[in-house]
Length: 148
Image 1 (tube, helix red, strand yellow):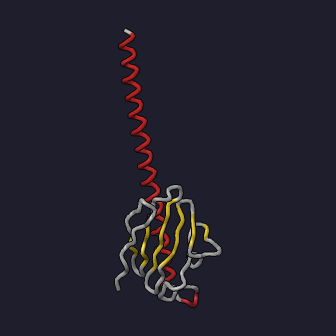
Image 2 (image 1 turned 90 degrees about the vertical axis):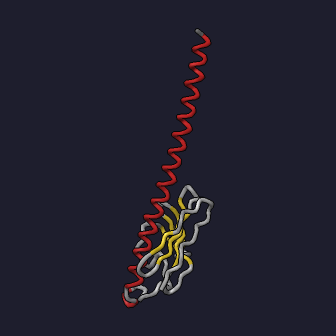
Image 3 (image 1 turned 120 degrees about the horizontal axis):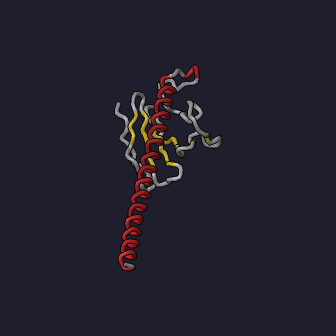
């Protein structure tokens, strides 16, 4: 009888160990997906707000059909803008950097907070925006350029 109880105990420990591993793996996957969704939502908001800036006349604080000079202080962003570098901002989801600014497009790179290897980039054009694939190695794959 003691041998059967020992085998049953070992079997239960194996089952509990496998269930714990699967639960941790499932939680990790859900956490990664949540971080990606949050970055996508923020990047979409940044793109929409900056397109509004693009079309607003320069006389009233807009870009006057240009993205030149854009930074996070030029449109509404729900986060903290770096005062010394207004092209960098962060919120509870991640940190964001505006780069490659031209008259008709610019790039925003995002790094997920707490998961610094999860990155994304979006190229903002006057009428659309293109989200790149998710980077898992700390670099954000660059989305394609805007076409005239």
